[in-house]
Length: 356
Image: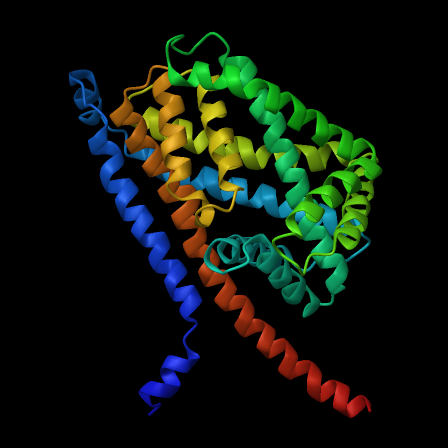
């Protein structure tokens, strides 16, 4: 048997602490969010008319969203002239990188390294695999911003004019316009992408000395040029459709959770809440935006007329499916990829030795 000392050394305590932090935030938010909001009589009545089928349909839609995301990654690999592995393997890679981004220190960077290593073991060039993962994420964020604009336009005039949401919009609109303009310019002109990334890296290098602003600038320009390749040709519309499908199906899960609680909010409000929540999740404040996403989405839905307590319950149900269930599958996928990767290595090493 292994001694307690050797067992303690083998444990990744940073991962354990991150998991504990994640669970503590989840327990606090999920326990307090519904109780801190008022539960009017009509809201209690809607709880008596719960449509449990919404949960099953929501899980299926979320799986469809993840398949769409995987297909974007496949298209990125094909654009870089790489032969993707089977859909089964690529689906495992897609789920695993989502769990790794949330659970392991380093977030998206660690997830990209994992994708590169998993695909390298299956015949894909590691550098191109990392680039494909980055491209799919960049396109995903650009699509998310575009859908946010759509949601904002559809929801105009629907919110309570005295709500904090409207006041926040008035303050945030100039920032939003500048951010969208910078994103569009970065995609069209790679030099602008490099200037923005390099400038940001230069500021960050004052705190993180290991950053190389020049290398980051060159990398940003390269990704911008490759993004243009991804969006060119006869099948470009298919790539955009898969990227939109990922977010729209995910938003449909949130709408279904509200429908399951006998609510029929404006579709623009749900799209806006979903996209704002997902954009906030990209900011590395808490793992996967846990706590921040729930509060923001609840506040937006409440501003558009959904009872606060019902909005909180719907958002929690949505996050159980789109965050917890997806990452649970991702953990299983990561374990499966690791084991199959070890088998691949064991099989290729004797072949390489015999060849020599």
